[in-house]
Length: 352
Image (tube, rainbow, N blue to C red):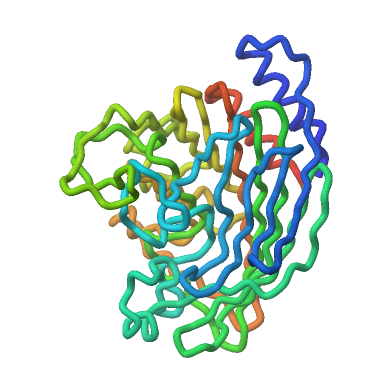
């Protein structure tokens, strides 16, 4: 990957927003595997950026968790892996940054968690298992390449997954490039049109969109509050997509990229997800919800637009499909639409 154009874009961003820097120094990334804990820690300089967690048991998929900004702010929700006070207790399958889908050959890979009764899990829910690390390299970027398998309730493997994570970071800036290749095994694989997919993260409470609805939250003892609480002032998030839609209007709409901007403890933060033009069903619909679910779904169409034809994407035995996404995390400033569009066009021109 050629890092020079990205550095120039970052420099323009900071200069445009009144900082005196002439350029942004990208720092080396360091990866440390802790196999006994089934995780790989990712550092930018001396700061923890994220951790690739591949534990089995209660986790039904590998994830990146937590994800931290350059300022050290945690942008991901803690529940259920590391619950913090003041968090929603909902959707226990939403944690970190993940990649899966709601209906694969009739089986639900999206909603699987220990909250599902075992009798149902063993019949209707699939899991994704880490198999091995193919490559791990420090530098700029830091690279982690892994193999995973998508396993049906009966124990059979329906898909082989190869995913490469590329991590970068500098002053006020973090980046994750996520490239996944899925390959069908001996049987055809169908991804049924579903709203629940596919590349997504669950953000911290402060980055949710303001809402007057009262909800149950964790208290200082990490117990569920006795009564529902309405506290819209704590939520500072707002969406903007590549087509100019904002707020809750972004949900379900097609777009090339979406930004979620807000504040964490008074510090401006902006998260942007880019979808690559060669991904299926481009430009995709977005599973971007006000309560903190932020995702892009290439395999949902009719579920979002009743007038459209259902998109039931199929893979023949042995066939493969690739997905590319980029996550940008800005600290201290909220980049405008023009800046994001410039960075997006640069992403589109990069070779895989």
